[in-house]
Amino acid sequence: MCRVMSTQQVEHVHAALNGFRIELPSWGFANTGTRFGKFLQAAAASSIEEKFSDAGEVHRLTGVCPTIALHVLWDLPNGLADVGRVHAMESQHGLRSGAINPNVFQDQCYKYGSLGNPDAEIRQTALQHLLDSVEIGQALKSRDISLWFADGSNYPGTQNIRHRKHWFEEGLRATHAKLDAEQRLLVEYKPFEPAFYHTDIADWGMALVLAKSAGPKSRVLVDTGHHYQGQNIEQIVAWLLDLDMLGGFHFNDRKYADDDLTMGSIDPYQVFRIFHEILHFEWETGKKADIAYMVDQSHNLKGKIEAMIQTVTTAMELYAKAALVDEKVLAAAQKSCSLMDAETCLRDAFSTDVRPMIREWTESKGLPADPMKAFRESGYLERVTAERKERNLASVSSYA
Ligand code: LRH
Ligand code: MN
Image (cartoon, rainbow, N blue to C red):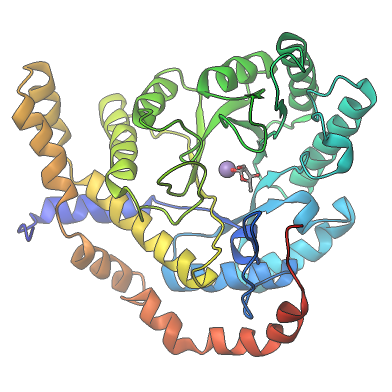
């Protein structure tokens, strides 16, 4: 719908974009797949240098993704010894290290869990990796330690769920105690996969209880792909905002489960409703919500860099649309239960084509009006394909 925007609305959207930042996952640039196979891309990144280079390219073109999330065992296999290398990448590509994601799910010892494992030695091994990850975060001056655990079980009766809860409380408290004054602990929940009977941190309530028991610098991380079908994610967001326990998001999209598809590709209105809850909270309270917006996707079929550019521009569009909601009119309509008027506030904003305003904003920042077109004309993809294809296409990929 082509609505004539008032100057005030355009300024409001530009102000919103000035404050909008979204973090890219290093693993989103690497060759990933499903258990049924991995379709290799010649241009995919595998070294930390290549991941910083690709993320730097996306930031150069969009201007809103200055940080890159790192997964410790994938990006700093030598731990603290790799920090120097990362610092060099940060300055070379104009990026900063973002959330530090420990890996306590791939080592053989974690078959029955990490912090939740009945074997105290294995719990200690997992805790040591978390403590090392906190140190890496301190060395990189990155703020968030972002925790996801694959822990759970596959068959009823095979694990004591209450005991595992206690072990998680112990491990998270010990991790929290290691944080410095600037750092936060983000606790991510997921209802299932890879565990298919119970997952120790399965929903927002469990993550909230564990975050609270860990300590005051803990918050809950909402991965949009980690919900049961039909779950009202923006209601969870509203509650966590109200409890001042919302720390961040992993944005992606899905039709069925944790599909990790590109943000807004299946249900853009879902993301819009989430952004709306946050912007309405900020309007009502006058407080800027302290939230880390991050992407968590795996691009199994789409070109990885193009998928990231598409994701970032989609995020900017949906955030700009949410900024167009007339909060004052909406609040009055909600109070008077004027259902049509209230709903129309959201629908009008969502159905507004904000792309002309975003183009104006990008040009005012000296950024390309069409990042995807600029990327395709940059020759970047051709250059990295030539550099990486031999190595990438040599690596075989099969599940069994
Ligand atoms: C788990 C998850 C988690 C990451 C991983 C890459 O599904 O969302 O955030 O560690 O994906
Ligand atoms: Mn995630």
